Length: 521
Image (cartoon, rainbow, N blue to C red; front, side, top):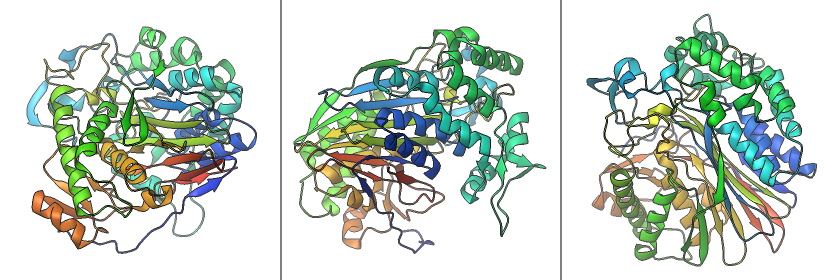
C-alpha cells in the first residue's frame, strides 16, 4: 500500500434544477451552456455552446482541432442517436514516415518508439479533425438556436483571453519542453521560455490563444462547412503543408461526421446506449454482460465482493478488447480529454466526449488560425500488420465512452469521463452504482472507485475501507492510491440525470477538479 499524502476529504454537491443543467470540466463552459438553457435553448444547443467554450478555457484538453462522439436522447423520442466525429488518418499518410527505432516508447502508450516521436508530436502526428463537423451535424439535426449564437460565448471567452490559473500552469509546465518546439505554442504558453504562472497575489494572467478568436468569429459567420471547404480550410491546409504535415485540403473536404442510432443493450431493468464502433462502447457492453452474471445488486453501498466483480469483469473485457479491436495496447493514460453532460427542462439529455488526445495534442498551433491540432496518429499501433496499425484514411481505436442510461422509472442519465483507458472503468462503475445499488447521482459521484485498464494491477481509491481492500488484495496485485487533484489516478467523470416525475435535472461534476462545475439556469 502506498503513502497517502493528501488526507483531506472533498465534496462537490450535485446541482438540481427545473430548467436543466450542464456539467463540464470548466466553470466558464458550464455557465455558457446554462445561459443557453435559460434563454430557451435545448440540451444540444447548450452542449454545443459549452463544447466550443472549452476550446478557449482548457485548450490542452480539446478544441476545434480534435474529434469525439456525442450521444443524444431527444425528448419525446424513443431512440438515442450517436454522432460520430472521430479523427481519421490523412489520405496521403505514408506508414514509412514512422520507422521504429527499436527502443521502447516513452509515451505511456505501450507502443514501440518511432523515429523523432513523429507519431506523438509535430505535423506528422496530426489526423483529420472532426470536431466542427460533429457539432455542425448535431446542430443541424437537433439544434434550435442559430449557429452563430452558439459560437458567441466561445468568441467572448477567447476575446478575454485564457486565464492562466494554477491548473493551467501545471498543464503548461508538464508539456513545456514540447511546447517550446512549436513557434505558436511557445509564444502563447511560454513567457521567455518559462510556463506562465499566477503571481502570489493578484489576478491570474490572461493570454491570447493565437488567432483563435478570429477563427471563431469566421466560424460563427460562415458556418461549420467553412472549416472543411472555406477560408478556414484553406488556412489549415496551407499551414499544414508549410509545416510538412500530410493533412490536406482534400482530407478536410472529404471528411464527414455521421449520425445513426446508438447501439443498445439491457442491464438489469435499465436500457444502456453506447457509442458505436472503435470506441470503448462495445467493451462497456462486455463489462456489463459480465457484471450481470457475477455481481449481486444491493441496497447498501458496494463492498469487497462488488469491487472484486468490477475488477474481474474489467480485466476480462480489456483482454478481449486488446485482442480483438487493437493489437498490443491502446493505453492512453496521459490523454487530455473533455467530457460534458447536458439535460434540458423537456428531458433531452446529451453525453459528449471530445479530445485532442495528448495534452495540447500534437503541440502544433497553426499560425493563421490559432487552432491546436490533435495528435490522432498516436492512437495507431506503429507496428505494421495489426488491426490498429497506421494506415492512410483509417480510423483509430479510441477510449471515449459517452453513455446514456434509461431506468425503468423513466429517468435518463448521461454519463462519461475523460482519462484515457481509465474512462471505461469509471463509466462502468458509475453506471453500476446507479443501477445496481440505487445511488443518487450525488452519492455515485462521491463513491470511491477502482481502476483496472488492461494490466494485472488494480488501483484502488485510498478512501475504501480495509474490509473492501482486503478481498481485492487477496485476488490481485493492488496499489492503493489517493483520489487526488494532480496527478489523477482515476478518470474525471461528469454526469447528468433527468427525472420525468419531478421535471428536475441533476448534474454532478468531477469532484477532484477545481474547475469542473455544474451550470444551471
